[in-house]
Image (cartoon, rainbow, N blue to C red; front, side, top):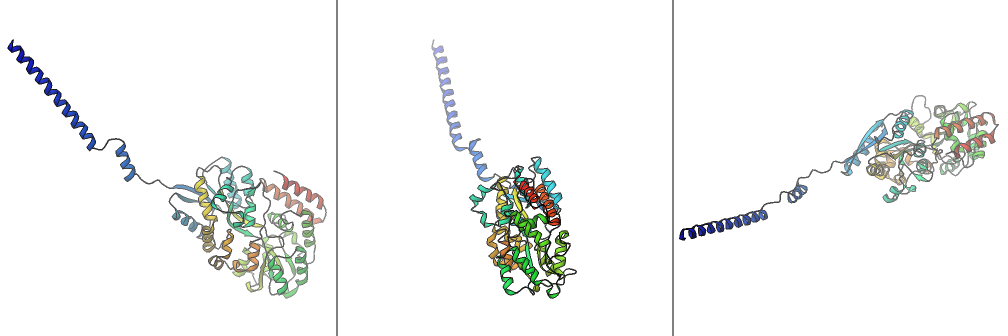
Length: 433
């Protein structure tokens, strides 16, 4: 009996000891959990705060023609250094505008996102916008505090399709009136440089001054059947606002005594040759002609001191290039940030001072560094011309519209007949969607 009691007592004691040991172990484990980091969230938080690698910048692909100046690359480098969210890569395209147009068209029509930012010839914008390949930028401009008036007028019109803005200027070009400042009177020169004159008054001056100082012609311009004729028709008709009267004025010029007898074959080359060699008092041409005169290219006899520059009566047609966003881009925010920079004051200043390009951002026309970088920008007549640019037709089928203009205008200028038919054909082409 006593033996059984002892056995039972020992067993009970053993059970109590095991229970105490188990509780002690639980307590130790609980205490250990409070002193050691949790293997889940706490460790992740620490990693996020101290060891996570920064995000790589998003790449923006910029499709633009080759630049034989350092300006474009310098502008890209400046943008890349200005922030760390995006990095622009320049995809250099051919300088053959026809080939570049077709390359871009093939890419855009396939819905490709290989390019984010596109450099476009001014006459491509309507075609690409009409086809749905470009991203509208009106809202983005408002958010950035940009207005249409901040930029070159003709360039902005060239990139506006059906009231929607699709582009900002990359660098503009424009039609100018060149005149012999050593022949034209100071009074007439001042009138020309102000832009406050008409084509009729220009014709009167051309007739008045021809044959002076060895000249043979009063005025030369582009009127052969090619794109230059569309440009000149745009100017004579004031962007086709007064088509019939503008064409009649053109006809009066090509049949006058103050132009060469073969004026209907004149393109830019014939124009600059006759003016540079002292054969003409007035010439309509692009800014490159001044560069030829200043550089005294082969055959040039006229000096820069003998040359004045003025706006054309209704404004000069704008040329040059525009910036746009690919509708299929997968990085539209980055594309806009780059366009905003490149078309804005900082980017345009780099393009102007580093490459001699004309600024598309108007405020820079009064910037001392920009003006000092380009001799033309200090010329009052040139500044007035740059402020009064106009645009060729903005159309989804520009090539067809331009061809219609060329054919009908040249046919009328060659014969003096069919004015009404020419007007109707051109108006129908301009109205087509």
